Picture 1: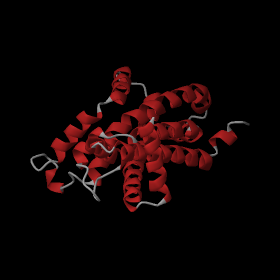
Picture 2: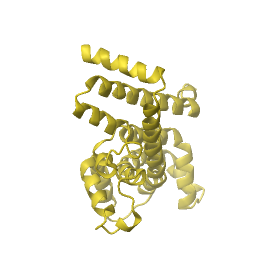
Picture 3: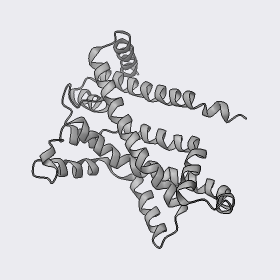
Picture 4: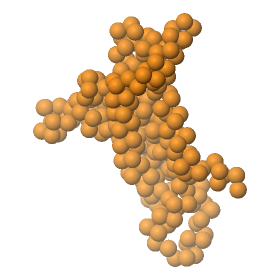
Length: 234
C-alpha cells in the first residue's frame, strides 16, 4: 500500500508540475496510438462490413482466422516487424526501425484484426435488420456498405475505442521496434517498463496512473463529442 500511495503522489506531482518529460512522452504515446487507430479503422471497419455482406466459399474460415488474430501476441508482431525493417530486411532501406513510424506499423498490425472483428459482429447484426429494405431498394454493394457503416457508427465507435485501449497499453511490440529511445521513441508503457527495471516503483506507478487517466479522459471525450450516451436514451 505504501508503494501505491507513493505512486499516486508521484503521479500528482508529475501532472501538477507539468513535467516536460511526462508531457513529451504522453503526447508521443497519443500520437502513435491515435495514428495507428485511425489507420486500423480505415482498414478494419470496411473489411468487417464487407465480410458481413459478402458471401464466398471460404468466408467462415476467413472470419475464424480474423477472430483468432484478435489475440495476436504483440511480441511476435514486434519481432516480425523488426526483421522486416532491419537493415538486412526487405524494407530496411527506408530506415524506419527505431522510429515512431515502426511503432505505428506494429500497432496497426495488432489493432486491425481487433477492430475488423468487432465491426463485423456489429454490422452483421445490423445487416439482419436492413437486409430486406436495402435489397428491395436495389442498392449496390457500395451503397449498402456506406449505409451500414453510417447507421452503425456508434457501435463502430466502440470498435475504435477498443483498439485505442489495447494500443495505448501495448508495450511488447513497440519496445522491440521502437527501442525505448529517450526523446525519440519512449512512450508511457516503455517508460514504465524502464522505471520498473530500475527499481523506481513509485515513478513507475505514477506513470501507470497517468496512463490510466489518459485512457479514461480520451474515452470520455470521444463519447461526449459523439453524444453516444445522450442519444441512446431516446
